[in-house]
Image (cartoon, rainbow over all chains, first blue to last red; front, side, top):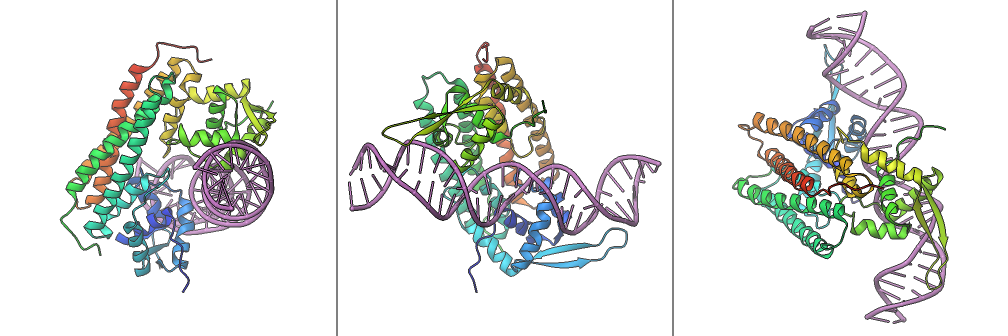
Length: 184
Length: 184
DNA sequence: AGTGCCATGTAATTCGTTACATGATTTC
DNA sequence: GAAATCATGTAACGAATTACATGGCACT
């Protein structure tokens, strides 16, 4: 058996959504716009490309559902291998998620698939990451404090206040975590 | 003369950076990692692809600079047409910047290229946009308040506190705006 | 009669990343 | 002697978007 490369974020997001309930591509597109919309909103065509790929790799299964008053549809459901893949993703805490700081939020969104300690580890990792960025930004701010460039400084300030707000939220979220649940 | 489609965000970011001072591709890559890094960090190869394109469209010019102790380099400078393009971008307030809420911040970063009222309009637009999202998110929160799904709710809460922090920042930034400057 | 939702997909194109390739100079 | 910095690019690949295509049913 070849070692499968980890699915990309879009694939994992789809996996996460079909982990709760089986869904069609159309469902997923609608759902993404509503619930996860502020974190991840792929186009419909992208979703239709991803779904067969998941089936090919054994992470999901399809089932045709004939309908009378509407077009027939194909609904997708996660497989055990799919569950393993998404758990592995949720267990892995990114130290450097580059520009994509939203991956943390996306992982938290699927926190229900995993025991509480794993979610807690994720939040801890997020906190570390943000504190590090905060320090970097604050030192950047000190370095250019006297200088002229006001607009870059304003933008930097924005980044700082957002991080601070997010850190406060992390504490709140940590306290709100369920005592512990199975994750399965 | 054909009507040129508006350059994309990366092209505009590059234009903005060579508006202050002429720079080489290498300079830009380094600069992006530092100053604008938290908003926009393209790869080096991407920058090297964009620069000739800007020249082709008459938005920038190149000039070869021979050096003795280092490799020769090519430095790029913005043209009047380039300035027009970036000003047009800064003047246009996006009502629906999709997922990419950072475009607002990026535009503010280049606020110096444009008179104060234009920047103010940009901030106002950003405020409107955020207030609208905030209302949407808060109503989503109310709708699912009693329900079970705790993790989605936590993530939603994160989005809300970040928006609130950003709104506070907008007020601060608006007050910090210079009385008025030329922009040119 | 027209609009909108349900439903799935393909095609063309753009955007972007990673890896490869090269090579001198400076610094440790 | 090794590693980092300066400097520019190409090639291969993947991810994602927009536009196109199709068609029935429900609602106003």
